[in-house]
Length: 236
Image (cartoon, rainbow, N blue to C red; front, side, top):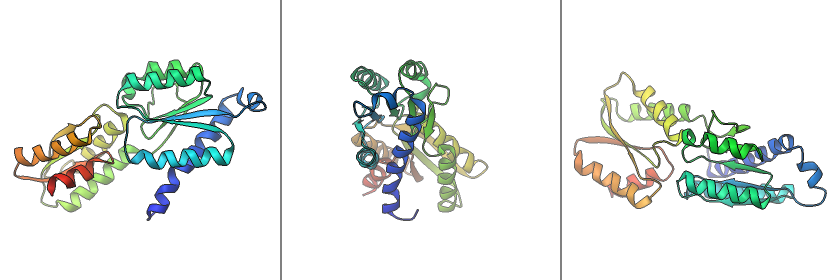
């Protein structure tokens, strides 16, 4: 995939896969579909431009398949996601795709939802939960690829700072793990992993503060989609 057009196709394909899994996972869907549209939902961990592509994919897939799909945006907290999904279940959704804000602490939450409807994790996984599938990137591999690029950019090593929204999000954990694995044995030194809780203003300030506190820094790495623009903004 070498173009923005290719990238925009991904969320559409992912949501079609989600609906395919739903069809096999929910025994009641076929019966109820005779009288009403199937209702499903997609819940993000928080607001981000990245999710705009997913929202477009959800909308397109829902139209093509003749179902009703809701797209809900979290606020980077597990409490908000619980409120959203609990309300969706009460409203009658037949399945939910969710990007867990903190997978480690949401296992029981996801298991409770799974007692009522099929739950799929998207982008960030909760592998120890009873979710029926994970649709997304191999985040450890993505982190390793990032590390390989960092090694190419800094052949002589140096100090770098890493930025992400939530430290405990599973995709953040795995990407950071892959990054560290890739640079192991090199002269690249990771000073810290700075978090911003999904706050774009804080993301930029984190980068600005890093530049001031560490004038000898030679690289900055963003693990979430908006981190790179925030870093570039700090460098202007």
